[in-house]
Amino acid sequence: MTVEGTVYLDHAGTTPLDPKVLEAMIPYFSEHFGNPSSLHSVGQEARYGLDEARERVAGVLNCRPREVVFTGGGTESDNAAIHGVATALLETGNHIITSSIEHHAVLHCCQHLESLGYEVTYLPVDSNGMVQPESVYNAINERTTLVTIMYGNNEIGTINPISEISKVIKQRAQELSRTIVFHTDAVQAAGYLDLNVANLGVDLLSLSGHKFHGPKGTGVLYIKRGTPYLPLILGGGQERERRSGTENIPGIIGLSLALEAANDKREETGNHCAALRDRIISQVLELIPGSRLNGHISERLPNNANFSFTGVEGEPILLGLDMAGIAASSGSACSSGSLEPSHVLLALGQSAEVARGSLRISLGRDNTEEEIEYLLSTLVDLVERLRQLPSLTTAQS
Image 1 (cartoon, rainbow, N blue to C red):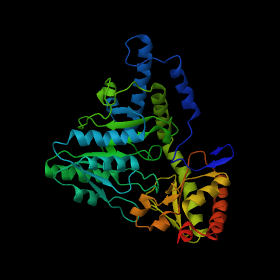
Image 2: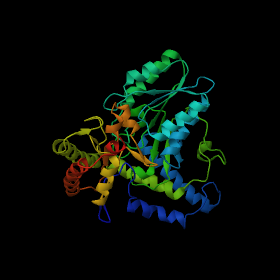
Image 3: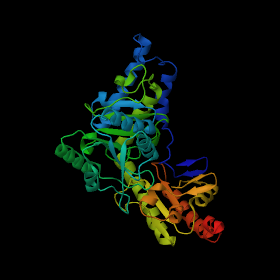
Image 4: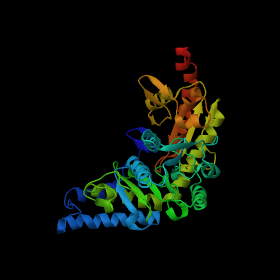
């Protein structure tokens, strides 16, 4: 997608709102503005839109509409899932299992619970960034109440075997005669992977609207019927007392339509992005010496390519691409003048120096072959030029 002359390759960061989705949202800002909790006709018009949206999402997830909870985004959904289950099951145990490559919405939530006395196991991953089901099985003990493992990684694109992990959790829970809840952060999976919760075998699943051409500030938390759960947000008891606060009707309708459209075109979009992704991967590894693909070569999101380049930090790569009119991302974050290596790449066993030189390219349905050829020619020249400059590591030594 080109935005005012920019080649946009950061769809894992956010996506543009679908014009058709925006068009459907607009009436709910003005003529259908009612509070869905109100009994009068104005409120009931909004309630009808809310109910329809819930059914749309349930259709994609293959679940009951009442199992769909609308939230303010993926971060809230992750926090609500982890806090909600951990507190509800505290009397039976205080042990949580997650992985070392989760999104910070999960990691920081687990770290907060650790500060409150919970025990958290951060599972290692293999060199491809994948969580092995047997490591989950072996980590479960008589105090485990929750396992939270992401579906598709936001940085390196590796897809975890969620259904296999679900099976070993159920097996171990039965052996220990206890309730162990399974949550997955599926924020990056929507529009690219199967979200059928029956196939995945999960009890909770998080989504974020702006990752699949829906509006920002909208999310979904699927909560399987019967799952122990205490709400994170208390108040008027909306969303069947699982998420209080007047519902964001325009946003919810936008999210539901965007999710339905993304899921309907999932195969088409996935094939389109995978072809462009494979072109990028083959050419970068062939034309740029010292380049390395991060993540699984085949079990990866169709729109994700992540590379490390020896001898080059991530920030100058991003700035150079931006100056050339290409918007991409990195696993690195620049804070107070200090480049921090990606926690995901460190978990893969990379050195801090190599982990600082990462580049994430995340494609979308509107990217073209011409844009990819422009990216490749620009990137090859840019990395070569940057390697001729003193690096941050060299300058500090």
